[in-house]
Image 1: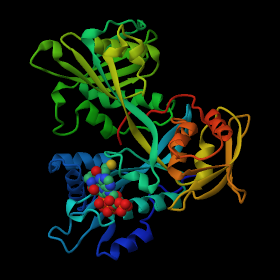
Image 2 (image 1 turned 90 degrees about the vertical axis):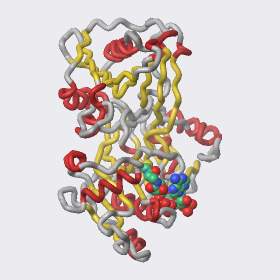
Image 3 (image 1 turned 135 degrees about the horizontal axis):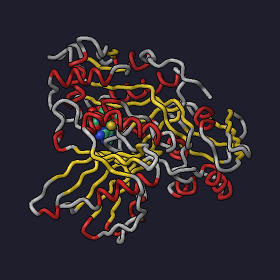
Image 4 (image 1 turned 120 degrees about the horizontal axis):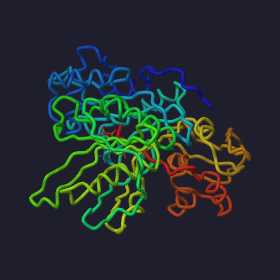
Length: 432
Ligand SMILES: CC(C)(COP(=O)(O)OP(=O)(O)OC[C@H]1O[C@@H](n2cnc3c(N)ncnc32)[C@H](O)[C@@H]1OP(=O)(O)O)[C@@H](O)C(=O)NCCC(=O)NCCS
């Protein structure tokens, strides 16, 4: 497996040249420097947010230390110091099998000013990120997306899905396990550390997950400057009978005209184990004066539907959530543990070149994979995005084949399905 060496790769020369040819400057932005407030303003504008206050700038500066911030500047414009495009990236870690992780080049804050859209700036930035990450030794890049139409063209494809869950609490009675531990309200100021501690334990067990960071937890806790609804944020923890804090629920309650329709909105529900999961969901569903509970980023088939008297009171809307891009086929495939043996030549079509070609993929009886380039004709074919979608086992090769996104014999596809079956369904439980 390629090991990631360089955590702040230099700017890609090809993208620098492509942008320069249209009069634009591609530049790293120093988080401590004078260029940072304008960078943040451009990001806020891109995501339709308000102009950041000084306090918010300082808070973001703290939160973005260690990241690689890149701006694209049009120095001929009226605000030459404000980038017309932005991207932010950093070294993260993706869980690929329970207990196994791989370095991940994470990408966020992709914006292009409305005045400069549709002239190839996003293409230059994204391909620049991919070339820089590949050169630095990363096998995978990843992102979460606002629109599903943008990133497929650069070889990203969904690898973990999540559901938005709504429960009509007036229709349900708790039929799930009764947890023996205790629930306690805890202070908002303590939430950053508490969320980090529980999440850090669960994310290494769940394929598709990545670690959070302090500003992500502060946002959930309503501790960032001028956070909307901050004063409504409440939190309870679950502590097991041996005194270990195993779970945390952070929520707000939105009041409606009619008290039976008040809505408990889950901002985070992290459970290290089944007891904590049952205890926290039960707390939410049995909360007085609440008619509805909503929670984002839950498992595709949410466990809570097995814990209530009327499962149809639980609705789950599935959406793609974690998009991955394979940069190094042997590195990506060798990272996880597999469920069965395989020996196939896989042809990968990658217009950007990183993964393009025929790969002999072998998975041994021990569930460990290796891949190497070969001249042998492929048994199965797929675009690079399909390989990313298959990687964590969140979708089967036979399902992608139905859509023409994998091509091969039924026997070879079934062998891939058996080998790639995941030990746990992939899930990413935060935005990044
Ligand atoms: C999405 C965004 C970054 C694209 O920037 P851009 O510089 O206009 O993109 P490019 O000119 O490089 O276009 C690349 C391709 O994507 C297409 N495209 C761009 N934005 C698209 C969108 N929102 N939906 C569908 N296609 C889109 C272009 O048509 C072009 O297609 P082509 O490759 O077939 O020619 C920009 O519109 C933006 O900042 N949007 C608001 C913020 C946002 O949504 N960011 C994404 C966060 S996940």
